[in-house]
Length: 196
Image 1 (cartoon, rainbow, N blue to C red):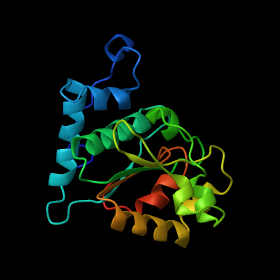
Image 2 (image 1 turned 120 degrees about the horizontal axis):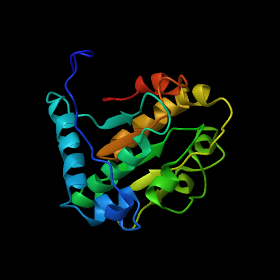
Image 3 (image 1 turned 180 degrees about the vertical axis):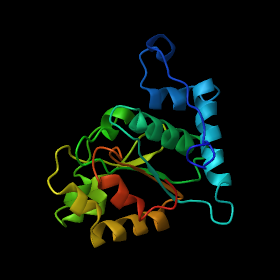
Image 4 (image 1 turned 90 degrees about the vertical axis):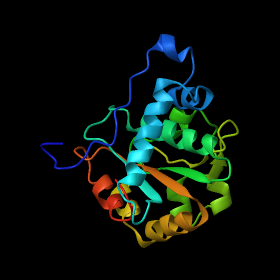
């Protein structure tokens, strides 16, 4: 806080394999809603919403500084918990890491009929790329790793239109992006988000 001048959003505890008991962290958050892990996610969500009281964010981008810091685990756990906590709200997570996609693995969900880059290129319909996790009710859009021209895809007019459409159809949209210090993708995507 001293270095950035920004308030801390929250602290999320790490989960040991013993605590997880064979579950993915995102499934653990959904199945154990009273756990310290789930409570810390709720606290982070509250901090995000209270930090923008005049206009609560609808499109939230999650990034990290470097790879393997837990951003996909965090966003999938938070999004799943938010979807499970209030079934009347529609929550979406979009895998915007076109270099090292991991939302499918982090959520433990099956593939859909297509990926975000295929939709933006016009080769797949919106219905073909949206999946829904039956456990939490969370909607998701997957990506392919090593997608060429990822920065150009994320900075395209088609991407802006896609995110705008999602923000109208869903109560909360989470974008999982690559790390900031590794590639430029997150900086580009940040321009179309309400909260980073």
